Length: 128
Image (cartoon, rainbow, N blue to C red):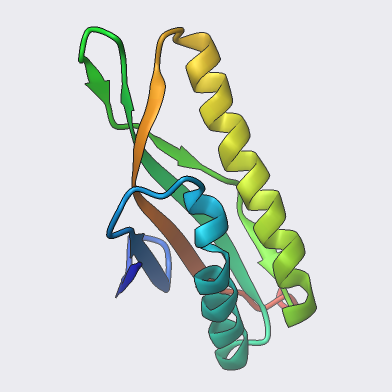
């Protein structure tokens, strides 16, 4: 897995995770990188808001492909002990969005993960 740090509009940092080979469960493979990234962000800021995106390649029988993005809602993390809960919540949300897409547009099958993205924004919970 390769990591690249950038900054998308509206976020302080955006981390891109690319997989070198096909993975049977890329979201689970992403867990350790996700945990490390959030621990590092929390060491810099007392509180962060995070959102994740999963870009996939889907195929149909007639060799048509689609490359949609699936996004999670923003989640607030204030303590490293919350990271596993946030990861599991985001993972379930991304899988549910893929399942809905496949069900609504019958015939699409997951071909591969093109990338996973973690967008982080420093957050001051005392200002709200």
